[in-house]
Length: 155
Image (cartoon, rainbow, N blue to C red; front, side, top):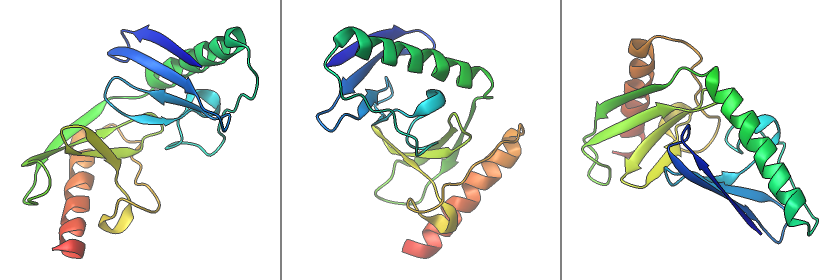
């Protein structure tokens, strides 16, 4: 099953997909594809996945709509943070964009289509770095420090 919702708040159409394993996935306009979780969160922010094992398209659509409304509510409280840091890594874009998403997790845009959550010690795997503050300068410093640690680890 599939449910499409046009969302001005998310910048385009979002697509919910019901998988055979009963998990529900969402494809955001920015290309992020992930499982949905309780309270309007995604798998990057929670481990409480929403599953639906039924066959009713109406019920599936209700689940998707309710998740979407909760997700929009979580975004209202979030202060959007984006910064760009010069990259000296050949396989990345010359400037890496970092953004904070709901739940305050920080993601790095490593190429034109891919965002990856940044983690401690300059990694993409492990405990994700979160920033709940409101100062762009602090957020930018966290991103620069992560990139420095990444360079020390891999270059």
